[in-house]
Length: 112
Image (cartoon, rainbow, N blue to C red):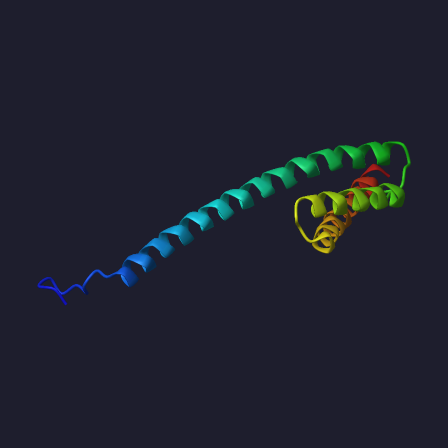
């Protein structure tokens, strides 16, 4: 301890401080990406609400299995290009599509 009661500043302490600062910086980047994802999902759902209203107005079914299959194939390819696990990308898309279909069914019920 020095005369102020502080531990001596050594390389280990400096390394830990640097690591903690880097950790904080990375976490801030993650937080920014999370915020962007939320805004992108909100924008996506605005478009899918429009699709739901069009489908309801024209008596089209809430789900479109052919489009979903094309989307899965396309997004799996994009995931591979981006070095993201395609299985994860497919699960994520399936989760979103299930929510979209739920919204379309709700819109359809209101239109009837």
